[in-house]
Length: 424
Image (cartoon, rainbow, N blue to C red; front, side, top):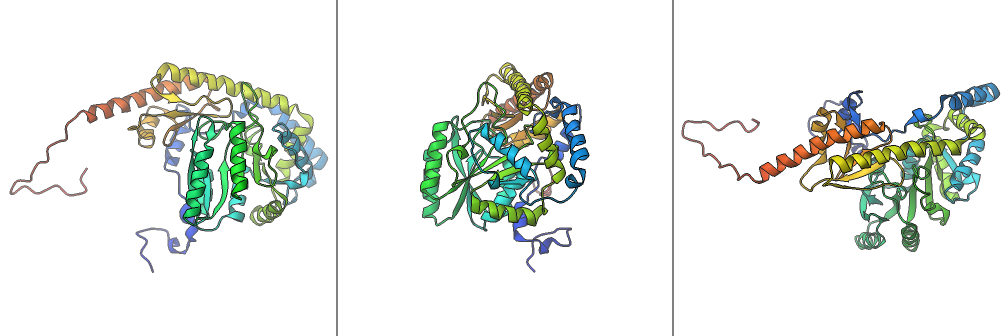
């Protein structure tokens, strides 16, 4: 048996190789601390569900149980509740998408849809092209299927087409098999950047000419502030795009209802994979959402969410300007996130424990993701104030040490033992 190191797990050597991609988050324990009420969390992308009137949901639940209780509590179709799929067409039409109800597969949140796509496409050693930066949990999914992720550069206008061409050419020369391009083109996670319409068309043309599928993940597209973003990439490309949507951001994540819109042949495999994974998505939650969409002013409710998040975005931008004026950040026109650039010598991961000690939390990366969706404007401002104390303290500390000459190395004297190697 190969020695894989000390491990208290009796079954350590029995796991499939692909489980090595299921790495635990380095900051999970800190986020547990950050959930305390005295900590201002700018970390999690949690929707502000309190802006959703309770009576709208309670009414939909009551009517569903009164009119269709036995059906709602039963198994359903592996493809999803037909009436809900019709409503999903109405939702996607707001972003220019025209499709057939038969091409929609309802999933247990769009995260589940990501996993199903990876499951039917990825073999060990395959390559997924992804924006840099990209949604971290999607990367975990791809790596769990032993795929390699190749990051394509972005700028303030989104994914850079010329960089995409260069990456594809290099990977082909290396004999790599590219399965798809993963993108969050609208109010991206974590950057908040939106890909321009011109870039979307160019990226689609590059993918088409290289026979590369595009996986378009769009949780935030309807949550714009100052004006609608460009239409979805799927609106102009049917055969080469799988589109992922969700009700987690525009309604509530607790329902765990998302969907995939896919070309016919891919859709069939997604249904089979869906049935293999969960047998059928929840009939109960699907029917409640369908009832809500049938009876409530859901477009007006999305507009309410836009106002809530716009106010919080503005509060964060104002606070950053007041407390961290020497740094730079993205200015999103929708979604949940601001991407804060730190000085090159500041490590956001190593700084996080100190930030939690100061009662503020964020999501680390090569930059710093700050979520403005959940805290109130006053808490956002206080969180940025606390964060500025941490960041400025780190900069000052690093500056002090950078100006200090290296300490002289003392040679051990005769009769004086060297300290053990593990001390300090």
